[in-house]
Length: 82
Image (cartoon, rainbow, N blue to C red; front, side):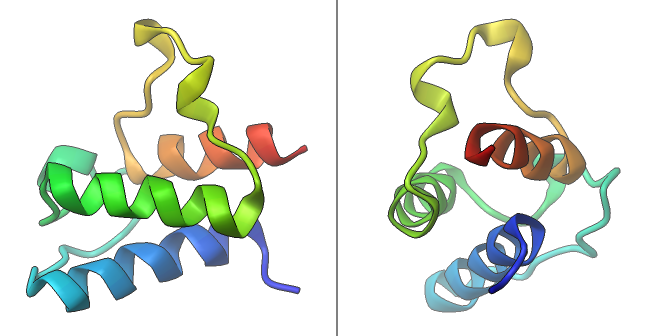
């Protein structure tokens, strides 16, 4: 079974490819806004991750808890999937 991190990063790469976007290097410190993806890409990723992991952490998140970096985003899903 793939880790949550692997599933999240796989979705970033798949959606970027499908939408014709060029990803920057996906490190934990990469800002989401500088990843090369747009809001449509993130909407697709969130929908697919809900299907894959059975959770949508954005349903209960407050503004101050929204992820800013790739690392934050992965951790956001890791915590929700527990």
